[in-house]
Amino acid sequence: MLSYLEGGKGLPVVLVHGNFACKEWWRGLLEEPFPGARLLAPDLPGFGESPLPPGFVPSIPAYAEALRAFLKEHQAEEAILVGHSLGGAVAMEAATAQTRGLVLLNSAPPSGLQTPEAYYPILESFRHNREALAQALAGMAPTHRPPWFGELVEKAQGMHPGHFSGNARALAAWRLTRAYPGPVLVIYGALDPLVTRAMAEETAAFFPKGRLLVLEGVGHSLNLEDPKRLSGILEAFLKEVGG
Image (tube, rainbow, N blue to C red; front, side):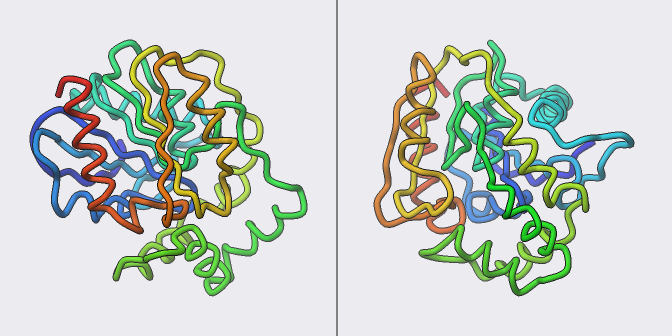
Protein backbone atom coordinates (compact mmCIF):
# COMPACT_ATOMS: atom_id res chain seq x y z
CA MET A 1 0.00 0.00 0.00
CA LEU A 2 1.19 3.48 -0.87
CA SER A 3 1.13 6.45 1.47
CA TYR A 4 -0.80 9.38 0.00
CA LEU A 5 -2.33 12.80 0.46
CA GLU A 6 -5.89 13.62 -0.63
CA GLY A 7 -8.02 16.71 -1.07
CA GLY A 8 -11.20 17.81 -2.81
CA LYS A 9 -14.16 15.93 -4.31
CA GLY A 10 -15.02 14.94 -7.84
CA LEU A 11 -13.20 13.23 -10.70
CA PRO A 12 -9.99 11.60 -9.46
CA VAL A 13 -6.84 13.46 -10.47
CA VAL A 14 -3.79 11.45 -9.44
CA LEU A 15 -0.53 13.35 -8.99
CA VAL A 16 2.62 11.30 -9.61
CA HIS A 17 5.89 12.75 -8.32
CA GLY A 18 9.32 12.51 -9.88
CA ASN A 19 12.72 11.22 -8.79
CA PHE A 20 14.13 12.54 -5.48
CA ALA A 21 10.56 13.64 -4.70
CA CYS A 22 7.44 12.60 -2.81
CA LYS A 23 3.77 13.43 -2.35
CA GLU A 24 4.64 16.73 -0.63
CA TRP A 25 5.77 18.16 -3.97
CA TRP A 26 2.03 18.56 -4.66
CA ARG A 27 1.18 20.24 -1.35
CA GLY A 28 0.56 23.63 -2.97
CA LEU A 29 -2.18 22.09 -5.14
CA LEU A 30 -3.68 20.10 -2.30
CA GLU A 31 -4.00 23.12 -0.03
CA GLU A 32 -6.58 24.61 -2.43
CA PRO A 33 -8.08 21.82 -4.59
CA PHE A 34 -9.76 23.15 -7.71
CA PRO A 35 -13.51 22.51 -8.16
CA GLY A 36 -14.62 19.13 -9.48
CA ALA A 37 -11.41 17.27 -8.64
CA ARG A 38 -10.51 14.68 -6.05
CA LEU A 39 -6.75 15.06 -5.81
CA LEU A 40 -4.71 12.02 -4.81
CA ALA A 41 -0.93 12.24 -4.42
CA PRO A 42 0.78 8.92 -3.61
CA ASP A 43 4.36 8.22 -2.60
CA LEU A 44 5.74 5.70 -5.09
CA PRO A 45 7.44 2.61 -3.56
CA GLY A 46 10.60 3.56 -1.67
CA PHE A 47 9.81 7.28 -1.67
CA GLY A 48 8.47 9.35 1.20
CA GLU A 49 6.48 7.16 3.54
CA SER A 50 5.84 4.27 1.14
CA PRO A 51 7.93 1.17 1.92
CA LEU A 52 9.78 -0.72 -0.77
CA PRO A 53 8.30 -4.21 -1.26
CA PRO A 54 10.72 -7.14 -0.88
CA GLY A 55 12.61 -7.81 -4.10
CA PHE A 56 11.47 -4.58 -5.75
CA VAL A 57 13.88 -3.37 -8.42
CA PRO A 58 13.37 0.20 -9.69
CA SER A 59 11.89 0.23 -13.18
CA ILE A 60 9.21 2.30 -14.86
CA PRO A 61 6.96 -0.76 -15.42
CA ALA A 62 7.29 -1.71 -11.74
CA TYR A 63 6.32 1.79 -10.61
CA ALA A 64 3.43 1.77 -13.10
CA GLU A 65 2.18 -1.53 -11.69
CA ALA A 66 2.22 -0.05 -8.18
CA LEU A 67 0.35 3.02 -9.45
CA ARG A 68 -2.32 0.90 -11.16
CA ALA A 69 -2.80 -1.04 -7.90
CA PHE A 70 -3.21 2.28 -6.07
CA LEU A 71 -5.83 3.43 -8.59
CA LYS A 72 -7.79 0.21 -8.16
CA GLU A 73 -7.56 0.38 -4.37
CA HIS A 74 -9.00 3.92 -4.38
CA GLN A 75 -11.58 3.31 -7.13
CA ALA A 76 -9.77 5.80 -9.33
CA GLU A 77 -9.17 3.79 -12.52
CA GLU A 78 -10.79 6.57 -14.57
CA ALA A 79 -8.51 9.24 -13.16
CA ILE A 80 -6.65 11.95 -14.96
CA LEU A 81 -2.99 11.07 -14.39
CA VAL A 82 -0.62 13.99 -13.81
CA GLY A 83 3.03 12.98 -13.95
CA HIS A 84 6.05 15.16 -13.14
CA SER A 85 9.52 14.25 -14.47
CA LEU A 86 10.06 10.52 -13.76
CA GLY A 87 6.40 10.48 -12.71
CA GLY A 88 5.47 11.39 -16.27
CA ALA A 89 7.08 8.19 -17.52
CA VAL A 90 5.23 6.24 -14.81
CA ALA A 91 1.91 7.85 -15.80
CA MET A 92 2.45 7.11 -19.50
CA GLU A 93 3.27 3.48 -18.70
CA ALA A 94 0.32 3.11 -16.31
CA ALA A 95 -2.34 4.65 -18.56
CA THR A 96 -5.11 2.32 -19.73
CA ALA A 97 -8.26 2.65 -21.82
CA GLN A 98 -10.04 3.76 -18.63
CA THR A 99 -7.68 6.69 -18.03
CA ARG A 100 -9.54 9.97 -18.58
CA GLY A 101 -6.48 11.94 -19.68
CA LEU A 102 -2.75 12.52 -19.18
CA VAL A 103 -0.98 15.69 -18.10
CA LEU A 104 2.81 15.42 -18.37
CA LEU A 105 4.75 18.09 -16.51
CA ASN A 106 8.35 18.46 -17.69
CA SER A 107 8.27 14.73 -18.17
CA ALA A 108 10.88 12.30 -19.34
CA PRO A 109 10.12 11.59 -23.02
CA PRO A 110 8.75 8.26 -24.30
CA SER A 111 12.24 7.34 -25.52
CA GLY A 112 13.59 7.44 -21.97
CA LEU A 113 16.06 9.80 -20.37
CA GLN A 114 19.78 9.16 -20.49
CA THR A 115 22.05 10.20 -17.62
CA PRO A 116 25.77 10.48 -18.47
CA GLU A 117 27.73 7.71 -16.76
CA ALA A 118 29.99 10.22 -15.06
CA TYR A 119 27.01 11.64 -13.20
CA TYR A 120 26.06 8.42 -11.36
CA PRO A 121 28.67 8.86 -8.60
CA ILE A 122 27.21 12.32 -7.99
CA LEU A 123 23.74 10.83 -7.63
CA GLU A 124 25.09 8.33 -5.11
CA SER A 125 26.86 11.10 -3.18
CA PHE A 126 23.51 12.76 -2.46
CA ARG A 127 22.84 9.98 0.06
CA HIS A 128 25.32 11.63 2.43
CA ASN A 129 25.73 15.21 1.14
CA ARG A 130 22.62 17.15 2.06
CA GLU A 131 23.97 20.49 0.87
CA ALA A 132 24.73 19.18 -2.61
CA LEU A 133 21.31 17.51 -2.79
CA ALA A 134 19.61 20.74 -1.72
CA GLN A 135 21.46 22.66 -4.44
CA ALA A 136 20.48 20.09 -7.05
CA LEU A 137 16.81 20.19 -6.06
CA ALA A 138 16.86 23.99 -5.96
CA GLY A 139 17.98 23.91 -9.58
CA MET A 140 14.83 21.96 -10.42
CA ALA A 141 12.70 24.85 -9.07
CA PRO A 142 14.74 27.91 -10.08
CA THR A 143 12.04 30.59 -9.85
CA HIS A 144 10.42 29.79 -6.50
CA ARG A 145 10.62 27.24 -3.70
CA PRO A 146 7.95 26.78 -1.01
CA PRO A 147 8.51 27.25 2.72
CA TRP A 148 8.61 23.49 3.17
CA PHE A 149 11.52 23.05 0.72
CA GLY A 150 13.79 21.84 3.55
CA GLU A 151 11.33 19.03 4.21
CA LEU A 152 11.51 18.04 0.55
CA VAL A 153 15.29 17.78 0.77
CA GLU A 154 15.01 15.63 3.89
CA LYS A 155 12.48 13.33 2.20
CA ALA A 156 14.70 13.08 -0.88
CA GLN A 157 17.69 12.03 1.17
CA GLY A 158 15.53 9.48 2.97
CA MET A 159 14.37 7.61 -0.12
CA HIS A 160 15.47 4.00 -0.55
CA PRO A 161 19.26 3.74 -1.09
CA GLY A 162 18.76 1.77 -4.28
CA HIS A 163 16.86 4.69 -5.81
CA PHE A 164 19.73 7.17 -5.92
CA SER A 165 21.19 5.77 -9.11
CA GLY A 166 18.57 3.05 -9.70
CA ASN A 167 15.90 5.46 -10.88
CA ALA A 168 18.20 7.09 -13.40
CA ARG A 169 19.11 3.61 -14.66
CA ALA A 170 15.41 2.80 -14.89
CA LEU A 171 14.70 5.89 -17.02
CA ALA A 172 17.67 5.15 -19.27
CA ALA A 173 16.43 1.60 -19.89
CA TRP A 174 12.77 2.48 -20.45
CA ARG A 175 10.94 2.93 -23.75
CA LEU A 176 7.20 3.47 -24.10
CA THR A 177 5.87 0.91 -26.56
CA ARG A 178 2.23 1.98 -26.89
CA ALA A 179 0.63 5.38 -27.22
CA TYR A 180 -2.29 6.20 -24.95
CA PRO A 181 -5.08 7.25 -27.36
CA GLY A 182 -6.85 9.83 -25.18
CA PRO A 183 -6.16 13.52 -24.56
CA VAL A 184 -2.60 14.34 -23.51
CA LEU A 185 -1.37 17.74 -22.38
CA VAL A 186 2.40 18.18 -22.23
CA ILE A 187 3.44 21.14 -20.08
CA TYR A 188 6.98 22.43 -20.48
CA GLY A 189 8.67 25.04 -18.30
CA ALA A 190 11.12 26.77 -20.61
CA LEU A 191 13.79 27.31 -17.91
CA ASP A 192 14.15 23.57 -17.29
CA PRO A 193 17.86 22.57 -17.01
CA LEU A 194 17.09 18.84 -17.27
CA VAL A 195 14.39 18.22 -19.87
CA THR A 196 14.82 20.01 -23.20
CA ARG A 197 12.12 21.57 -25.33
CA ALA A 198 12.94 19.02 -28.04
CA MET A 199 12.10 16.26 -25.55
CA ALA A 200 8.78 17.95 -24.72
CA GLU A 201 7.98 18.26 -28.43
CA GLU A 202 8.83 14.58 -28.90
CA THR A 203 6.50 13.65 -26.06
CA ALA A 204 3.56 15.64 -27.45
CA ALA A 205 4.10 14.25 -30.96
CA PHE A 206 4.13 10.65 -29.68
CA PHE A 207 0.44 10.71 -28.77
CA PRO A 208 -2.43 10.94 -31.29
CA LYS A 209 -4.16 13.59 -29.15
CA GLY A 210 -1.07 15.16 -27.65
CA ARG A 211 -0.43 18.89 -27.49
CA LEU A 212 2.33 21.02 -26.03
CA LEU A 213 1.96 24.00 -23.71
CA VAL A 214 5.21 25.95 -23.25
CA LEU A 215 5.42 28.20 -20.20
CA GLU A 216 8.05 30.92 -20.16
CA GLY A 217 9.55 32.05 -16.87
CA VAL A 218 9.24 28.71 -15.10
CA GLY A 219 11.63 25.79 -14.70
CA HIS A 220 11.35 22.05 -14.19
CA SER A 221 8.80 22.10 -11.36
CA LEU A 222 5.67 24.14 -11.91
CA ASN A 223 4.09 22.21 -9.02
CA LEU A 224 6.56 23.94 -6.67
CA GLU A 225 7.20 27.17 -8.55
CA ASP A 226 3.61 28.23 -9.28
CA PRO A 227 1.00 25.74 -8.02
CA LYS A 228 -1.86 28.21 -8.57
CA ARG A 229 -0.97 28.45 -12.25
CA LEU A 230 -0.83 24.68 -12.49
CA SER A 231 -4.16 24.41 -10.70
CA GLY A 232 -5.81 26.64 -13.30
CA ILE A 233 -4.35 24.58 -16.15
CA LEU A 234 -5.53 21.33 -14.59
CA GLU A 235 -9.00 22.72 -13.91
CA ALA A 236 -9.33 23.69 -17.57
CA PHE A 237 -8.10 20.26 -18.68
CA LEU A 238 -10.60 18.53 -16.38
CA LYS A 239 -13.46 20.53 -17.94
CA GLU A 240 -12.14 19.69 -21.40
CA VAL A 241 -12.19 15.94 -20.81
CA GLY A 242 -15.66 15.99 -19.35
CA GLY A 243 -15.11 16.10 -15.61
